[in-house]
Image 1 (cartoon, rainbow, N blue to C red):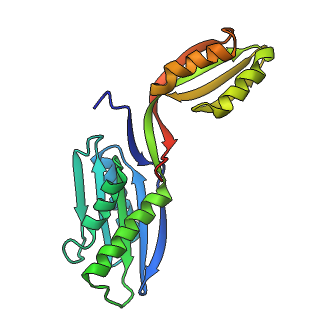
Image 2: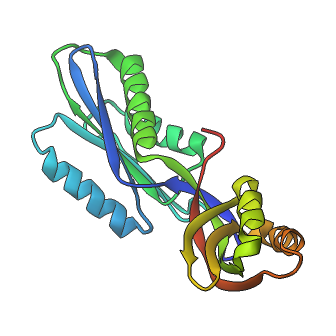
Image 3: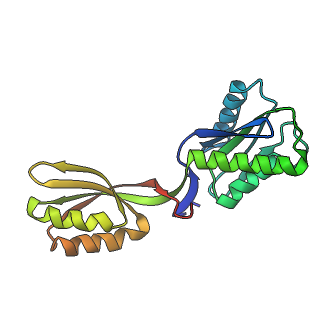
Length: 215
């Protein structure tokens, strides 16, 4: 999987809550690169909500989803952990964990109601944490003179890049991020737009979070 160009995960740790028939549900999502990180996240949420009725969870680790674990944490079998992980699998996310905390409100939801509630909790957690596509990307520094900058800036506005930083000194140095699959075409276009006057320098390769267009 070293050559995998992209994978989906969560942008940040975050949470959101909702009420169903007086039961309070809190969905937590967190990016985790290892099973140890996922278990540490779970332990932290359990400690935070040690008075909760249930802290049900699921996590998927590895770009090939090599590690998948889930728990009903006392809810009837198949009504909590499984719905949480099925939502995660449907969204295609990996290297992340979801915990859905429940404070029982006195009204039984039934098996079907629990499945729907924990699926909603998982979706709520993923939406709160933000699904992103981590794509193999290249950082470039592009240097142009001021007479060319306006043309380049206009082109970059609609190009498939993220401009990280512009530095205005004796010349303009633009630091931008581009998906690896788009890099060759982008460099060709920069050369065309600047009449070959742009100086470009590759400044590293990394996985970078791009918005998930499917959301």
